[in-house]
Length: 67
Image (cartoon, rainbow, N blue to C red; front, side, top):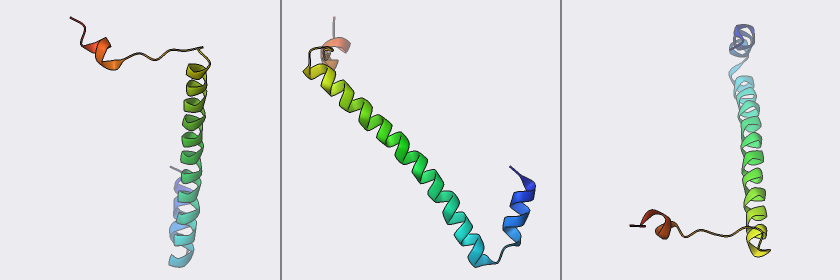
């Protein structure tokens, strides 16, 4: 962690520190949304591959309960 940045943030008035913290947290939420959207796109591509016959589904029960 950058000690200088932390010292500057801690020197801010409380209301400015809260606003600064909210901006930092908002930047993390954006990254999480990007990751979430990437997974949604991946799932859509996999569904499309199955629907087009380019991929096939495996039955979980039959895979793990074979004798």
